[in-house]
Amino acid sequence: MSFRRFVAANIVLVVVLSTKAASADVVLGPVTYGGGYSGQWIDGALTGRNYSGSLTAGNNLDITHSGGSTSAFRFHTALTPAPFFEMTAAASTPGYIPGTGYVGGASATAHFTMQYQIYIAGQPGVVHTHINALGAVTTEGNVAVLRIGNSYASVGNYTWSTAAGNGGTGLDFAVNGNYAFLTNTIYNVMLEGTVYAGCGLEACSASNRTMIDPVFTVPDGYQIQLSPGVGNSIAAVPEPSTWAMIILGFAGVGFMASRRGRLNFSK
Image (cartoon, rainbow, N blue to C red; front, side, top):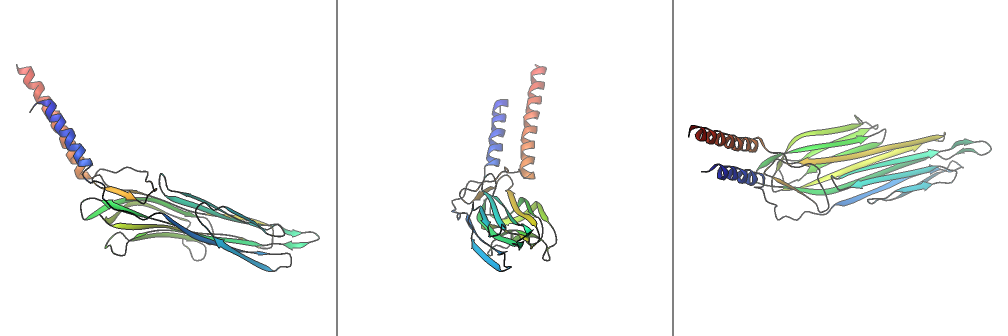
């Protein structure tokens, strides 16, 4: 075999190894959102007033109550390059006003979920998928949860969560490791958060945040699919066996080039 043909054969081998898992003909469900908000404010007569409503992606709400007490919600949701959401809640009260007395008191609570699906196409079996995720909260009443699972799968059911206050154990969680999933299986990914901010009768300004941001990476030879419109920011990572084949191919190219040089020199 000529040197050029040998090189071409190794290049074709590398390409085949890196694309052996073709896109599966599977339809994943759309991204869904859900949530609601509620709160309370206290009027000048120190009477509690309640409010509530529904949240969808992109809702930003500012609520001003009589006497100057305020509640606010802010949401940031994104699907590309990787799905995540961040939300904050704020509350403020003016406190004591001369000639009027104590005015206000306010609290704000919001709960929000984002759900989509992932599917790893490839040879039937278990694939170790890298998950890099961060969930963060600030203070009391805040909760962040990342849940991945399929009740029909024997592997790949995972939940990470953190809470601050109310019995919670920390302010954030970090996931950076490989986890087992079944190939050719649909998994549901849920990002869930609760955020709270509250002020009493004294002058106060409070703001809290909840955030979740996961990214998935599959080995070379597999292909990850996500719900329509959802992106993923990290490319596939070659498996050790694939790296070995690639290195072996380039070693063969080097050997043949060296051998060809010796043959030419001996003529």
